[in-house]
Amino acid sequence: MEKKLIMLMLLLQLLSLGQSSSKPTANITVMGLVYCDVCSNNNFSKHSYFMPGVEVRIICRFKAASSKTREMITFSANRTTNELGLYKLDITSVEGASCATEANKDSLVASCQASLIGSSSDSCNVPGHKTTTDQVKSKRSNLCVYRFTALNFRPFKKNIDLCGKQ
View 1 (tube, one colour):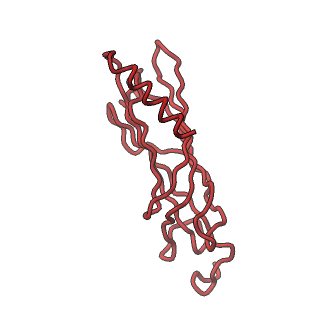
View 2: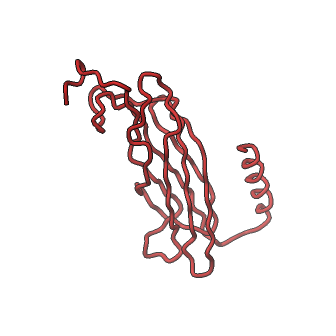
View 3: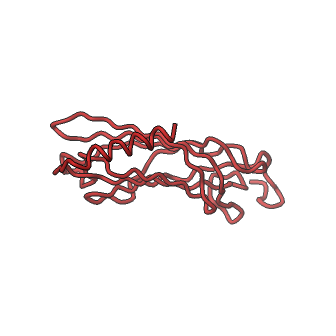
């Protein structure tokens, strides 16, 4: 499936090489973190740690908010967190869309969601916050960065010696 998507993107790039366009182009980055909530308190505590190797599904829907079109683009991708617990999806060259201010009638309207698929740890594998929606971190004319609130897993049983009774 990923190979087909890459081939389709390459074909579209080749077809567009000969065409010049005055349409704006947006580059979009979606990112978030996954951690182990060792004390099961929905907070990143001194005992928590970021989790590498966690599978996360990202789904984004983008609509060019233009009076001339009603185009909708949907991206769905699975990502694996790196050694720092970070997952990231880069979507380059969304033609006809701009990440400019909300006052710009041609700005990009977007909605993204991230969901946990599976834990990389046998000792921390019970989903805590398992789905999150986006929060805009940065918006410039050709770059949008969307940041998710952190997702987490918890251990099956809380370590009372480590975390206390609360």
